[in-house]
Amino acid sequence: MLSNNGFQGGQSDPGEFVSIWLVIRRNLLPVAFLFGIAVILTSLYMRTVPDRYRTVAQMVLSLSETRYSDTTGRLETIELGRSSIETEIEKLKSRDFAGQVAETLGLFEDDSFVSRINPDTGLEHPAALHREAVIDKVLGSYSLSRAGESLAISVEGRSTDAELSAALANTVITQYISNELGERIDRLDKNIDDVRRRVNLLGEELTSNEADLANFIRSDNLDDEQLLDQLRSAAERARTILSIGLEQNVPPEEELALREELAAAEERLQLRTRQELTLLRKEREIELLRSRYQASVDELNLLETRSGQIEAGTSQVSVARVPQVPYAPNRALTVALAGAMSIMIGFVLALIREGLDRTIKTEKQIFNATGLQNLGYFVKQKYGPKGRAAAVFEPIENPRTPLAETARGILTNCIKFQHSKVVLVSSALPNEGKSFISTVLATTAAADGMNVALVDLDVYRKGATKLLIPDIADIKCSDLYSHDIVPQQVVGAQDAPGKLDLITVESPTRELTDDAEMKLRKLKDTLTSRYDLVVIDTPPALVMDEVYRNNTLIDAAILVVRWGRSPQDAVQAVTRRLSQADVNVIGTILNDVDPKKFRWIGYEGYYGHYDYYK
Image (cartoon, rainbow, N blue to C red):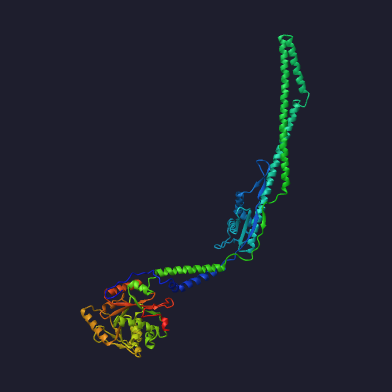
């Protein structure tokens, strides 16, 4: 609290809010403006966004596939596993497949799908670049999905053209089925060629082996079935003759001859036996080769039979229909979301603005910054055709207006509670409204029957003087230290029950001597003996030092704080300086309050809600 004992104000609290509701009320127009701009811009933008359509087709992969195995040389049934299905899905997502879809639909030649013209240069894109752009857009125009581990694959087509969205979904499936059927036919044709080649090779090998066998039989007389028996009989006869000769003790030379004859007979028998065994082996080889040849022929017959019967394993179970209603954009929802986001952003900016705002808006901020109580509120005035000059005489013309009642409450505090007859009105900075408030206090006191003197110490702007005497030629100025102070009666206050005189100071106070102090004391005594109330309007206390030079004149001082304009630091600084100069500041007046943004005014005895007086 500021008093004759010194300044004991609290610290400035720039981030303090009155309440969230007041924050909203103060920033309602900017938030509403941001909301309107966001909704309008979003609506305009959404008009440029084309409708998008989507539709779904579905196909089911084959559970198994019959293929010819190169390893076993037989037809085998292969079951499709998870990896196989994922491989097929990746094929559907490949650029080559997307190019086939685009080729089938004729999208490479369709300029409405992807334009060939470069909008920046006006020239055509290179063919390869245009092809890649079309494939990229095709890949982005369909998507694949699979439910769990099922073999069903759903294809969703999306486009700004309803018919194209359905064509995309259906073409992806038909192209895949066509590719699959083509791959099966190509694989079967390759298998037939391989088997036919094997049959030819086996046939040639079989013919060659049979010819070799025939030559072998003819060259060795293997077709003579009695030759073996003859060789056995010759060997047995030679053995018998040798046995008889040994019993008869034939000469050694004859015995040797008999033995040689037996060895030759046995040699011929063994050779014949080996030849027959070789014949059997060759016959078995030919039989085996004949079996392989026949099996290959059977496989070839089977594959050639399947050549005209092969079918695609994948089947389309659901055909995409042309959608009638676009799925995007949801313009109403987008505009609503944009509006909601703009409101959220607006309130965030409002909170930031309030947090950074260091201007005074509440009496609590005043107390925290200065330790002073607020004496009253002056709302933002709506001036008529005659402007502010006519508004200051409103308390005389109608003493029960809200303006007059507010001024009367402040005067009651000053005169009755503070016992102050000389009241100084000042502010921290220019354009705070102190001259207007000084003049209103003076006219209100005159309207209540008091003799009032209004001393205008603002020698540069003379704001109070101009409000009371609009014609500059009629202004009479006085020297503050002379004995011939010239009070000038205010013509506009002649109808008031009391008297209102104006003393306009001619030049600023420049003397700081003891003699000047004595002159000011005498002037105060003169004014207080002649008038019931003396109101002094001074220049801003942080701009000019008239307040401090003339503190001898005053009993009390009031600081004018402009609502939403006066910085807390400036108000705090001027309060500290006045305290150091032993100026008795009894409180503040919150001026230029916007009632639409600041709806409530507290009830503390000497000021009240403006609606009460209506």
